[in-house]
Image (tube, rainbow, N blue to C red; front, side, top):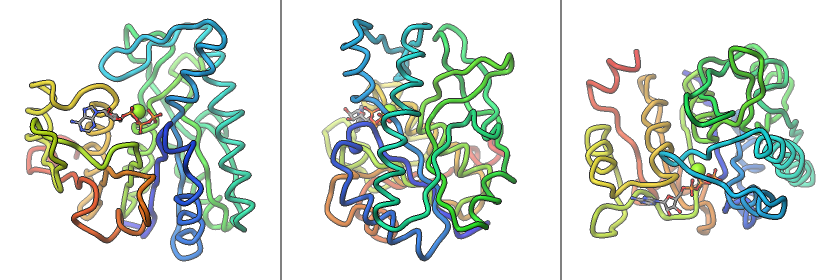
Length: 262
Ligand SMILES: Nc1ncnc2c1ncn2[C@@H]1O[C@H](COP(=O)(O)OP(=O)(O)OP(=O)(O)O)[C@@H](O)[C@H]1O
Ligand SMILES: [Mg+2]
C-alpha cells in the first residue's frame, strides 16, 4: 500500500477544471499523484463535428474505426495535452501518456462494442520510474488489446486499474454530479457492492455511472484503498473528496467483493 492517489477527471469536469487542477498540483507536491482523464462531452462534440453519431451500451461508447480515430486524436492529442500544459503552468512536472505508451496498460477487447477494451494489467515499473523521477503521469484512456490494436478504454476503468495495480491509497473519480444518487435523487454518502448492484439492476444507476461504480468497486481489492465518486466542479473538491465523509460517495467493499477481487 503506497500513499499514492489516483485522480480521474470526467469529460465534463475537464471544461471547468481549473480549480481542481490547482488542487491536483498542490497535492502532487505532498503525495504521489497519477491523473487519468476521460473525454465524454468533448469527444462527443468532436465526433458530431466529424459527422459520427455515438451509440452507448451499458454506459460504454460503441467505437467503430472512424470513432476510434477521432477518440485517439481528441483524448491523447487535445485533452491530454491541455491537462499536461495546465499542470506544467502550475509548476508540476507532468508527463502525458496513454495506456499505449511504454506499454503502460495491458487491455483485452470487450465483445460487441467495436474498438473498446478493458484494463487487464499494468506495467507498474513504468509508473514507478516516472514517480521516482518526480513526474506526474497524466494518462489518456487508450490501450492496445491482445492483438496489438489500439482501443478506447473507459477512463474510470483505467483509473481503477491503475489504483488496483499500484495499491493506491485513494481513487478519486471526479464527475459532474455530487455522487451516486438513490431512487429518490438523494446523494449517498456510501455504497456497498451489493447495494450498487441492486441500484444498477433497478436502473437507478444508469449510463456512465454504471462503469464508474463498477470500476470504483474493482479498485477496493487492497485492504485500505478508498474509492470516492465526487463532483469535480465543487469548491475544494479534491480536499473534500479525500477528507470529508459527507462529500461525494464512498464505495465500500463487502466481504464477497474482496474475495472476488483477490
Ligand atoms: N444514480 C445515479 N447517480 C448519479 N449520476 C448518475 C446516476 N445514474 C446515472 N448517472 C449519470 O452518470 C453521469 C456521470 O457519468 P459520465 O460517464 O456521463 O461522466 P464522467 O464519467 O464523469 O465523464 P467521462 O465519461 O467523460 O469520463 C452523471 O452526469 C449522471 O447523468
Ligand atoms: Mg464516464
